[in-house]
Length: 122
Image 1 (cartoon, rainbow, N blue to C red):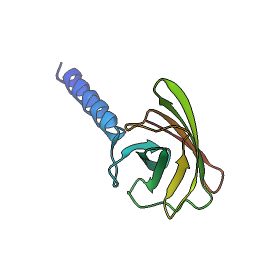
Image 2: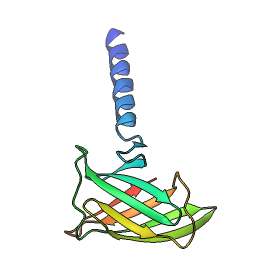
Image 3: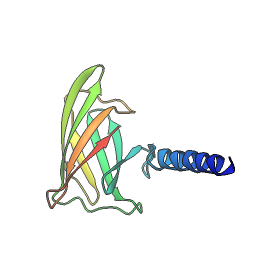
């Protein structure tokens, strides 16, 4: 009986750690942050501009030269596509045809400089 209880406690602890490890949080610039493959991706919006900051899992900035991304967001119940290109050291920048609202909802496909692709879901 004790071993069954111990196994149950261990499974519950592992499940809670796993759920917390991938939970969205606030990034270094105050935006939404989520995991995307080997990266942490932070999203910020300002009117029609979407900015993504790319970090490794140690929260160090990743150089985005040669990166590109496409965001498909849901804004007021409609899909909005935004193309993002490198802007500065560790960010990608794109402009929407409509005003964007935080928190964003949708997905971003990011292609790095060696054609590896990851997806961030917000």
